[in-house]
Image 1 (cartoon, rainbow, N blue to C red):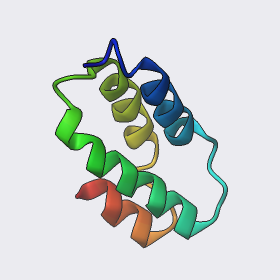
Image 2 (tube, rainbow, N blue to C red):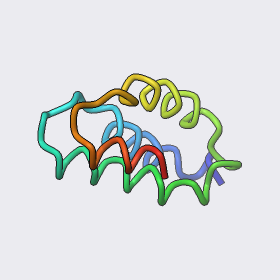
Image 3 (cartoon, rainbow, N blue to C red):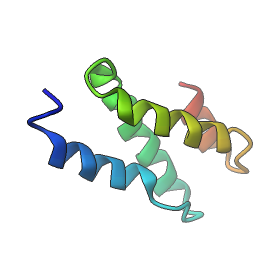
Image 4 (spheres, rainbow, N blue to C red):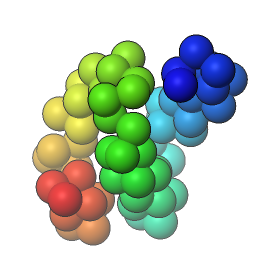
Length: 72
């Protein structure tokens, strides 16, 4: 229930919302977190608007591993 988990949701949003570090491992780890949150997509629609916008910005990222992680 998103109403009960608002602190956790805000924490996860802060992890996803951090600026790009240029470190491939950190970027792919962030998108792995996004993929695991797919199970909660219907419960937390507010996160998905933000994730969608961020994914659009990273579609032309210079690192292939990050582009592949976003495509999954």
